[in-house]
Image (cartoon, rainbow, N blue to C red; front, side):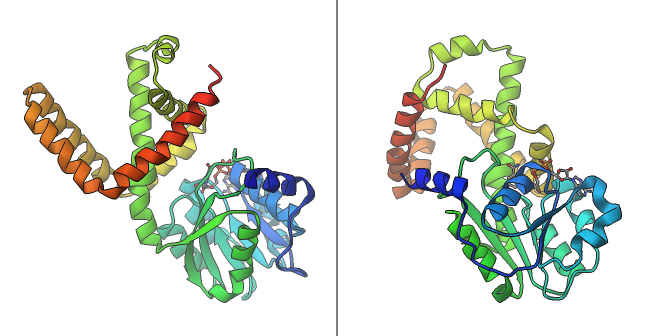
Amino acid sequence: LMRESYLNEKDVGFKQIKTDLRPIVIVGGHGQLGGLFHQMLTLSGYEVRILDKHDWDQAEAICDNASMVIVSVPISVTESVISRLPTLADDCILADLTSVKSKPVAAMLAAHKGPVVGLHPMFGPDVGSLAKQLVVVCHGRDSDAYQWLLEQIKIWGARLAEADAHQHDEAMQLVQAMRHFSSFVYGYNLYKENADLDVLLQFSSPIYRLELAMVGRLFAQDAELYTDIIFAQEHSHDAIADYLKRYQEALKILQAGDRDQFIATFNEVGKWFGDFAGQFQRESRNMLKSANDSRQI
Ligand code: NAD
């Protein structure tokens, strides 16, 4: 029900938190996420201008008098784009939507004297609404100046979570780089094995369908975005190498036929998960139920 009411708001517009604001510029505003923010800001009554790839000869004019500049370009060019921005007014907010945070936030602090904030929307542009979606906030400088923006994002229905940029990037190594890398390898393996997806689906339990869906949806999306997310994390190699090591350890136990050792490890991990294990079981029960209810193939 909550989602529906936000969807309706998307048709009629949102409450505008900060009135009489000078124009907002979205660098990369023709892209997926920039486009979504363009839509949300416009629906909230703000004047939005776009500075995309081919507009740099007009950058001065586009950024002139801007109250906020939001950078939403591919990760690989984010820092160079930030350093290329014209000098912004001292009270202009410089923000970004990049999936990694340390380097973009540092680049924004270096490029601009005024308010700086790093945002990481933890969702793709295909969400129907922002209701209950998470946006990570990494404070840069002068947070009072952009408090209204955070309030505005909450009006759109999203939840905010504050994080230190380095802490965010570290967590993202596991949450994103590792997750996507594992999905990538899983899909790569299905492809190499030339698995018959129709047959797999026929015999799939709901949890396996969910796993296939998670992996399959990766390959419906932009290769460059996910490659950038995986490559952008400097330490993701270590995290992935550690994961591979554990995979091999577990394989050894399996190959040795050491059932007792496997059970002991299983229980050790279960104990470590503690109360979360039960919580996850309850939560996934609902996910599995709705995954099963909404199957299309
Ligand atoms: P996208 O490729 O759809 O959009 C990028 C936009 O930037 C395009 O319009 C492109 O023309 C423009 N661009 C490229 N180089 C430019 C340059 N030098 N100057 C100005 N504009 C330039 O990508 P996206 O998916 O919208 O991702 C944008 C940012 O959002 C990335 O930093 C990404 O990490 C972040 N993000 C994306 C998602 C997602 O699911 N798509 C989720 C969270 C965060």
